Amino acid sequence: MSSTFGTLYRVTTFGESHGAAVGVVVDGIPPGIMVDVSDVQRELDRRRPGQSALTTQRKESDTVEILSGVFEGVTLGTPIAMMVRNADARSQDYDALRQVFRPGHADQAIVEKYGVRDHRGGGRSSGRETVGRVAAGALARVALATVGVSIVGGTVQVGEVRAERRDWDEVEKNPVRCPDAGAAARMAAVIEAARDAKDSVGGVVEVVARGVPAGWGDPVMAKLDAQLGAAILSIPATKGVEIGDGFALATRKGSETNDVFDGTRHVTNHAGGISGGISNGADVVARVAVRPPASIGRPQVGARAEGGTAPITIEGRHDPCICPRIVPVAEAMVAVTLADAWLRQRALRGRDR
Image 1 (tube, rainbow, N blue to C red):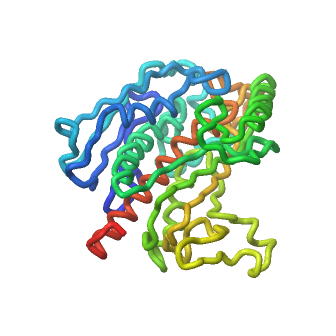
Image 2: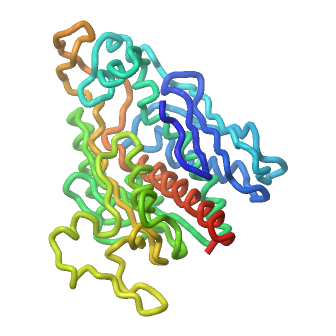
Image 3: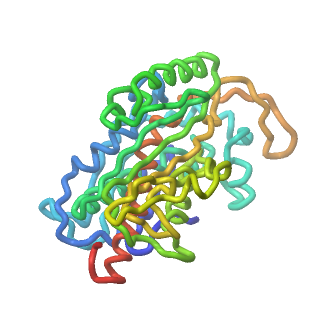
């Protein structure tokens, strides 16, 4: 199973939704970087369930344990193992689904590939797996900060409601994690309506990396935008990624979209900070389309493992919109990708910039 991402900054996650624990092993982080457990816990707290009425009510503290690789608050350059124990799984909610494949989930595909599956909460395919990603991303953020790179993100669309403003200081002030306070209230109403109807709704999450120097990435197979696309699309429930103006570029002319560089900075940033697969010094901007969560309370038709179909109603606690909790995950995967690009550039040129 492909559970590892990265070349020099390597991240390997482990664990299932209803197993004993989930976690990650991070290999390749340079030695001598100051790390505090609070740096990791802060990001995990943003991702954890039960934060508001707009998210799943599963109660997990998501308390991280750093098992190796950090001594007296400093990275050793050795693999860093981090673990979060599962405490509120309620596996009995999934007993009726042991022999049924849920619509919209990976149940049937997993059986086709492996011949066996953990039916409890989706097992390895669950969003619970992203705990390890967020922990790894927290370390990457600390490392990137040493070279002046910072990352922000937020929900910029829910259903048909779009954010018009990008006030990143607003994100943690509302449960939708939207950078537009006015839009946040309308987004919350859409999510509440979907929840009350026992349904779900999708949206778009945007991540911006600031301070990324020119030169990270590769002009051919390992383009920085391609690496970001692979990282972000590996997050559960994501179905599309765009860099910069993305798909909107298809409707415009070159005269409208060619970014102007005045010798010091890019006056425009239609390309999202990446030119020919290489960072160009402007903000790196990525957006991800997030599908409506597949677990909904409405009666549906599921496939029987032995053949045929059966009416099912999915029990358990689920998010009516996953965007608010995908924000820290998407930020983490951007951080992991940029940390890897940074280390590769340092190995190539012997310098960070």
